Length: 369
Image (cartoon, rainbow, N blue to C red; front, side, top):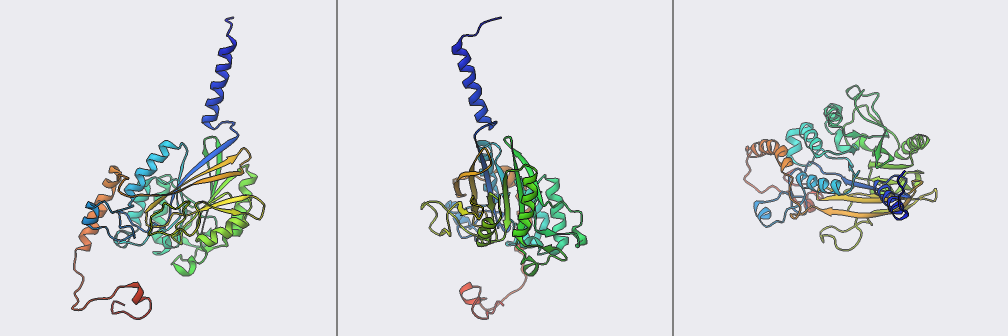
């Protein structure tokens, strides 16, 4: 037998150790990377920094931000850099621009499928066109291998949604670790939207029950995707044992760590927001504003037992320095052509100025209605 010098044995051991650490196998720590959006509200194209229509002058002056093509560019970049990163959406891709008003769920389904989300939850606006406006979207998400997770909803009494692909929870393998993912939409959706006979349960109770099931299946890292609002997310996180992260939506909340954020957005809290839970552990809550202006970027470090060590990150501003993905532009093109054509058709005429200022029309009657 050929003898191997001790120095080469030591080198082999060190090399194997480094490879094991880089692959996340039997490592003392584990890093989960989450990329996320929420409340995109069909802002398919780039917008002004306030979410309005971006003019040709703004485009030429590189003042436009966001748009799904920029989101895709940044997601591709970060997924290449951070192996196993999960891409999530916290609800309300429906409504908000003529893209949805004219093209409805067909446009949303095509765009979200092309964006290649991993997991999403429903928002209250996903129910605006009733169960029949939601059902085809759910089928499209299944066809695109996108998990729709909704733990606190009961669809059994709504004929249009019976048997549709909606999960109470899903489990995914990330670099050798099993991650449990649950989801919730605010129960007030019953009053805010048009959900038919869908029943909405309390988020905290629903989460507690599903987390218990996941823990019994030896899942020790659990992420919730919610459309309940920032303050409600803080309460959910505090009271649900063994829930580690909430990726939220609904309140269009801008969270940020540091002071180098755009001046037009004032942070309402830290990113991520750390919550001291009733079980003595810590949990993290994030949200990424709205309209696709930012892509949330969160990295959470866990110990070998699945307990959070720390969390870092920030929403990434998708300004003109982020190029628009060319394949996504091609996906958008036929929808853009359709919308542009409809928007150019006259629907009526007026001889007077029609008021549409929020600071006026939200306080008194306006001639626009």
